Length: 361
Image (cartoon, rainbow, N blue to C red):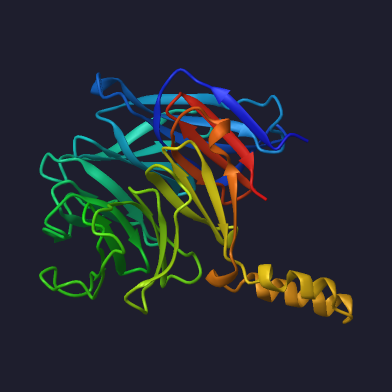
């Protein structure tokens, strides 16, 4: 069975995200994903689109657009999640606004529910994140961090001049704790339970002062582990409990645009780059123990138990790295990707207007 599908489309995409659930329709198990376009020449022509494909078949199974809606400005970030038992989308824009949509599974209509104008003082909204309580965090080119919820008219918490520079990334570590970074690549950790005039609860300085952080990812199970994708092509891991990097990878030859842990296998990390590749980093402790497991003379149940427990241990000293999508297979930058929460698929979009869906090992 083919484990990869490449599809050429008629629009350039900037962001791509899976819906958090699979959909059963007419006996088919569908994966939904959302895309946001980048059209810098005609900003009013940008779109949010919803797509689907049968996740049981990749061979000759192109994704189909279910519907699209116009979007003011370049789509700078996306979240595709469940809200009141319906698919919902949050999108950030280059005009500084944040939009909230609902997608109707019965008629495939996309409805704009709410739009927050100029959250970042007419500067670009660079990134957003959403916690389990549906509280939103946004950062922008004005250097500010905003916290709001879906019912807010205005942010209820703002930290101004987070870096004094362009803030490019934000991620929740917990319900009330976040990490930000940007052009100066300094990681700053914030607790929104304290005054917005308080300093960050921790600061970790970069390995190189000349790089900027383009993307952040927090380990799903061990939230003290933070990964950064950087402008110099490096991927760096930090431990919040320390003040230094615990691992660095320099396999990309161009800027890393996005980075993400795999929620179905939380010790796997992926990065995409302008060099046209996606690289997988497997930090599971089972890599170190796999040979000894083959030689075990214990019973089957004991070896199965060891495999399960060792796979849940993060171990940066015995990682396995491979090119999940080699740079020679894509003639252009891979700008965005996501890993499904419900099946073992990764989806990516390229600057040459193509979609790639591939099975994750």
